[in-house]
Amino acid sequence: MKFLLILCVPILFLFANQEPNVKFENLPLKQLVKISSKILNKNILLSSDLKGSVDFYSTKDLKKEQLLELLKNSLNTNGYELIDKKYYYKIIK
Image 1: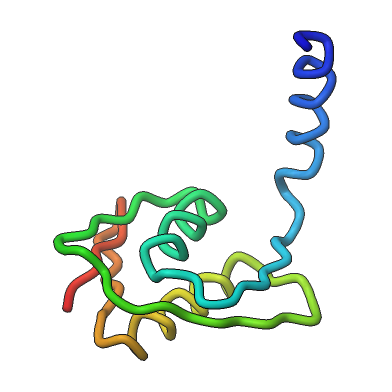
Image 2 (image 1 turned 30 degrees about the horizontal axis):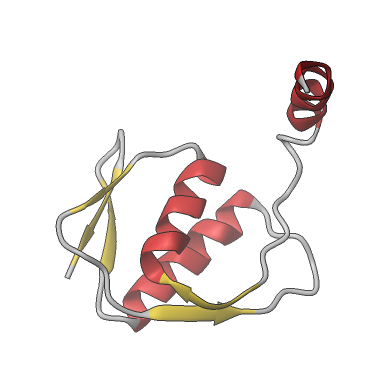
């Protein structure tokens, strides 16, 4: 088991800089925020529980900038706003 883990970790780093391929159905906004935070390598502050979900179907890989736009638009559609606070993002209603 340790051998398999040691073998897989370097492979994950090889693909870490690739553009993410994003497809989801009925994904809760909170999950989209968590996924986006990891991919964008940016902290995101939530001041309250997020309500709502989103569907997204992509035929191509997304660039990080496009994922950020997707997050902003998904939040706006559900009545939230993503604010850039320089060192992190903040979500407000």
